[in-house]
Image (cartoon, rainbow, N blue to C red; front, side, top):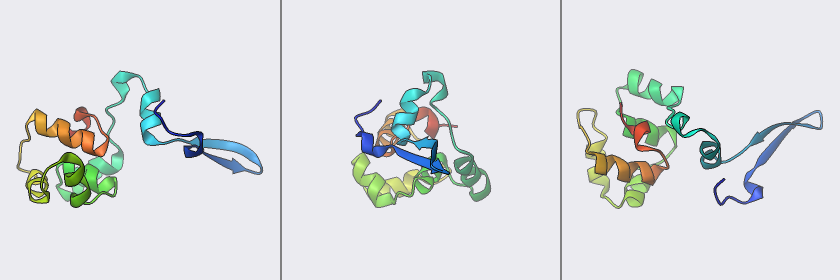
Length: 112
């Protein structure tokens, strides 16, 4: 597991009995076998299909991040990220790796 504190786990109870344990997403990914880590939630797929977004923009929206936040984390300008989020752009692997790290994903989750 990652370096999260035990306080980052949330226990949900029903009738005074523990029913669910909610853990940070990074911890959840650490529990998955390596071949199952590159999942894409239905909501992200929906943004790509219904809204015509590319995966970078769809993930950013899904995670509730602004372009300013992602560009700062990735060490690029907001204008550059805006350009990368255009659906007709084919991003290079090095760029995808930088963006994946910035938003806590694997590169496989940002590629079609």
